[in-house]
Amino acid sequence: MARFRYRMQSLLDVKSKLETQAKQEFAAAKMALDIENERLEALKERKASYEAEAQALLSGTLKVQEIRDNKSAILKMEDYIVIQKKQIRAAEAKVEAARQKLTGLMQERKMHEKLKEHAFEAFLEEEKKQEGKEVDELTSYTYGQRIREREQQSGSV
Figure 1: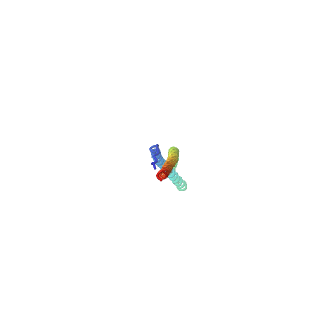
Figure 2: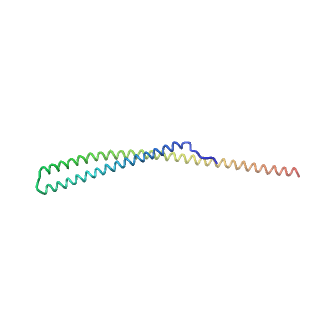
Figure 3: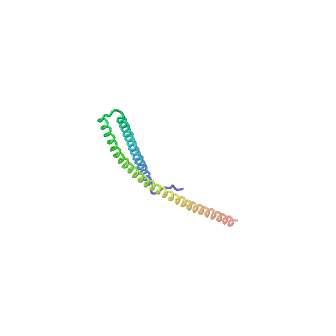
């Protein structure tokens, strides 16, 4: 039996490698997004601690400078939170772009795998036809040999 060789195997290999790279890029983008989300949570916690400190400053003896400093810190945290949300949106856009790229590459690889499967099925079908042809030839040869042997036996008697 002949050996199956897919003509575009090198292309399929390249598609698989590209898909692996896209998976790695997607994972890196996802990890960057997670880090940005953690930073946002840390900023929110810090702001909450400043707000709690503000409540404590207002309940005790009033120290104007400390209250102003605290209010300034809260406003700065709000600015940082706004900036961090922008960075999160940018990271989400990168994750989505990486996801779309990965999806496209996966579709291309699967398409080439389907083509390979169809080529293999066609190869098997051709092998069956070839095998059937060989069996027919062998049967015809064997039948012809038997007839010749009978003719020779009939002719020699």
